[in-house]
Image (cartoon, rainbow, N blue to C red; front, side, top):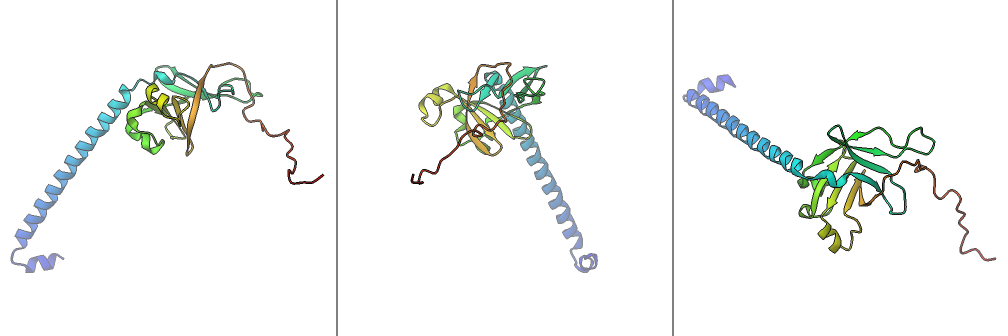
Length: 188
């Protein structure tokens, strides 16, 4: 390749153009990186500005069930805990860290306009993501019967804020263990 450049009468011209092109490309890339950093910083600022205190409390998937998830602030950080089975020596498991997310991440988890949500909080691995829907919107959307949305491992649903309790429950038990289903087409 260098021999071909030597043969060209304007080899210096080509080298200068190549150098200028590479320098311009590097400057453009550096400019792009700086602007994306600025966007990331503003995203972090927006997430930090969200009032996540609306999440403090306990949650379950049905209003008639005991609390299964507890969200609280411990040592200045937001954490979640899951209720332990009845045979455990404690009611709640070890706290796991939660992160405040920017509302712009909402479409990754829920099919709701981010303008209708106050705050989003999640585990760092995104296995659990919770969103608080603005009360006004929750009252007018017939698909919502709660102000809280939960994304748990690829599935989204409403969850309910319930009273926290300190009673073990066997959340791992099979609720259908004693049900016998007869064949309804069987003639007697």
